[in-house]
Image: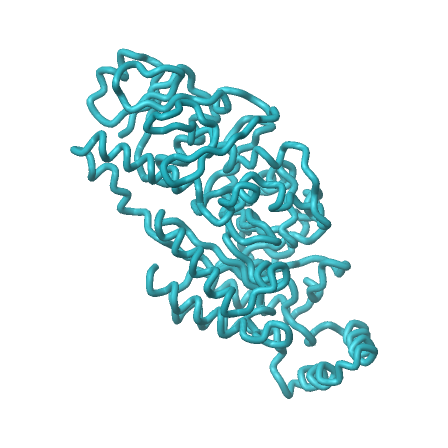
Length: 440
């Protein structure tokens, strides 16, 4: 057990230290405000306050973990050995920055509460983030700081190496599949298929018209119907796979088939028998709790069990409002924490964490699973080839393996089909699973 002396125990402090020590490093942590108790403690300990009590391991605190609400913060980047850090408090010390306050700033998404320019889809853009502006978006910086601090603890408390060795934590991979459009041609009804044919005629896409007729008359498999293959790959490579289903009425941004379609319902039921499933709240649900509730209820009626996982369509999240709605709807796991335009770590961590609601200054039961990369990011935003995309994902996996974290990717049934504009991506997906299965 690690004992931390501090002059004041706050919800922010307790939340941050438990995330770093218990969930990342696997070390039990307790707090004390009593100097006598701290001095008499014979196990691992360090002080987190304004001044060191003696020659103990000491981290001088920034005020962030003792404050409430949101204020503009002046942030200057410095170096802690070979890694960037901020909130410098003690130049030349073993820990020159308050990495705990910095971790809270990043994990709580403090900067997203501050005024910022939104992108075309009303999202917080990567370019507004501290991580992007200081070139550490592709690094799980919170985990890196935690592991560097563990090294200091190992040097200080050599006789307690076993306690500092987190035997439970190891590299993990979760493949998530967003089902924005379950089928390209099938089960879309006469009107939508006629509209598709007219559009293809106007654009002289004769091949697509021919393929549509072959699929409709059951002479070819629908290009997007990759679900049997996805389940087979999950079993073959023993990969934890989660499917998120869009169950919304048709809109400009929500183009799946009707949630009432019997074929769609049977598909969802079948997948739910073999893999984890979650709701994919529609484009306009970001600020509408009732809309999420309705779509969640539809999915629950299909699978006949409570739905506790969620990822927002288009990754549209408004903090803290969207997450507050998910908490109210008893969603336990949220998978939208990442950027559409850039790969990397939006919260600068590769470890799931609980959403801290700064409005109410409490840790909520909503566990956030940050993803590192999405197929559309690499192809549509960054114009990467399948080969370059594969190398990018493997490089992210290497960074995550250094801190025994969790890699989460987003693919779509459309992209793994390898058809049309996604040529080569089906092979990429299977090769990725094969490669990562070797190190899990």
